[in-house]
Structures are given as C-alpha cells and as structure tokens.
Image (cartoon, rainbow, N blue to C red; front, side, top):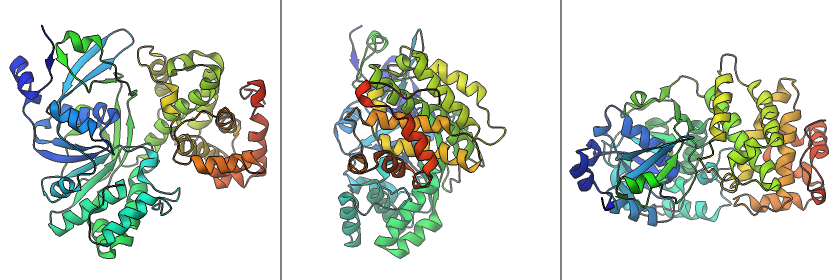
Length: 465
C-alpha cells in the first residue's frame, strides 16, 4: 500500500475511526509540542466523552507546527515504544492548530461559553515569572505585553499576555468562568501560575484582576510520560501506510494527577486513567524529585562522562548510585503513605528502555530552574527536618561541576549563572541562585564546595564523604 497523507477523510475511508469526526472546540491549549500531544491530547482522545471535547492548540512562537498539523486536519500518529515493540495510534482530539501570535483567534475562543478549559505546556521558564511567582518585569517581552494591554491592545509575546488577553475577552463577552490547567513541572503549579497571572492582570487593570480571581479556577497537576523530542518516523508508521510529519514517540507509561475545580465542565479524563485528588503536593513532588530530579542528575553526571542518553546513564554504576542516593533522601521528604517503592522500580525500568532515545542534551535545557525545583527543594526540606543532606549536596555539586564544562545548554537564566560563576565565591553564588535559604547556611555551602571536583582532572563528585 502506497503511503497516504494522514487526514480525517482518509482515516474515515480506511477504518471509520471516530477520530475522523472532529469534536467541537471546548479546550484551548497553549504550547503545541510533543509532550502535549503525548499527554493531554492523548488523555482527551481516550476520555469516554471525547466526541464532545475538541482542542484548539496554539504554538509558542513558530507557526510551522501549526501549519503542518492543519495539513493533517489536526491528526498525528502516536507511537508507544516499549522495550521490544511499537504500538501505533492516530490521535484526533486536536481539531485546530493556531499560531501563537494569532490573538484574534484566541480572543474569539475565549468569548465562547462552550470553551471550558485552558491547558498549558510551556516549560518552567516559559511563564516568565520570578522565583517569587511574580511577573518578571525585567523581561522585555513581559514589559511589551504589559504596555500593549494597558493601551487597550491585545498581547501575544508571552503566556502572561496571552492569558490576560483571553481573560479580558471572556469577561467582556460575559462568557462565564473557566479553568486553567498548567501542566509544567513546577510545585503547586496552579497556585504559582494564578499568583503570577493575577499580579500581571492587576498591573493592567485592577478590575480585570478581580474578575480573574472570581471567575478563573487554576488547577494544579502532576504530569508524567517520558516523551523525547525527535523527528524520527518509525517503521511502524510507514508500514501502516501513513505520511505523517508530526509523529510523536513516547513510552507506554502515563500518569496524570489533578487537583482543583472546573466551573465550566471538563472531559471525563478519569475514564482515560487520570486521577483527581484533594492534595496534589505529594504526587507532584514524587514525580518532580524522583523522575525529573533523576533526569537532571543523570544529565549533569552523564554528559561529562561522554554518555548521551538516559538509558546509557542509568546503566552507568556511578550515575545510578548518585540517583539512588538522591532518591533515598527525597522520599524521606514525602508525606507518609505516598507510594514510592513501586514507582522507583518502574522508573529504573523506564529509564533503561533502550528504544526510548531520551537525550541528555535535551534535558539539559533550562537547568537552573530545574535545579531549583528538583535539588534545592529537597535540600531545604531535609534541613528543616534535621535530616542528612549529603545526597542533595552531591546533586548540587554535580550541577556546578557540569556548568564548569561549559555545556552550552539553553538557559533563560544564563546571564545570572555567568555572573555567579564570575563572583568571588562561585559555589556560594550558584547555590544562592537556586536557593537563598541554602546559601545562608555556611555549613551546607561548604559541603557542596567540598564535593565540586576540579574540572581539570575530569572527575565527578565523589559518592563518599
């Protein structure tokens, strides 16, 4: 069979699949990327009421992915890659792809009372918020969006600007309440984003900020599915006869935990395996520290050793020992009753899957923000509880040693990192960059300092103390 472009008409012709019939747009998503398509789009496609919940997905800056997805009627192939076999599925929950700069379409959707949910995957740094959760007014794009909105125009450069533009349109249309669901690796992401957005709206128009406070529910989430960014088109897609420029490769495992209200309704995500809880913190910290923390640690320890993927790094005895030691400290910070034994075992199996090519260089991006939430947070809690902090100190030392190799990874806080490295006491300054609390503890800083190796010897932090 000759390969055929992936479209809804062709899908219907082949199989009569329900995904061939687009659902009405009731969800807006900001951040059209691989993880969104493997996670939120997948859960929505698998919900029992999927036929009622279509997604309009907006890109960040590039319009290329929106154009490509629209050529395929929003369809894309999801390949679940296990250790031995691939499983193929066509996902049809995205019914419209939009360039992020198209604020007119964003406003039109926000005015629609049937649109009930805004989800986001924009990375930790993409919110342009300070560590205190407030708008970063030193960011020129944030300032530009603020000035535009104050002048009565729309804003498209930042997530803060786009959300505020959408909220203003919804308020003016009297379209009712709405839920915002951030799906990025930030502790308490719902509250964090709420604080930042409301503070931004307050600077635009205090009455709009009051409307947001009263009408927008910010839902906290923990998301989990390893989805490397790759342009590979697996043989299973070609053999199925599809031409698909937007194939996503992901692991079979997935998890989604949510806490919060949906005043205008939501899909039946539970039927797809999502969990709704009253307290999100234990679950998001379990994932953030154990999965994401391990990813960062494997990156910082593995790259200087010449390792390239998570599978290679977890197979290295020294790298694995670093991870296991950090996990021992991190799980002690979780509330009693938070299951972690099976989760740790699953993580080792997931990391070791050689067919998921998760490159350490990809994980290295935005390292400073990741270290703050993944390593420093564990150290702060361990100190507060009077427990040993040797593992989190090693983790921070491994990050600092990696920085000294000049890895060249993209980091929105690169200027602050460079200034810290050029200071009279780089170790103290770098620790202070991710945690002023830790930097104020000379004993902890000294522990980190002793574990930072001399880069000229090409060593990594010793496991012993």
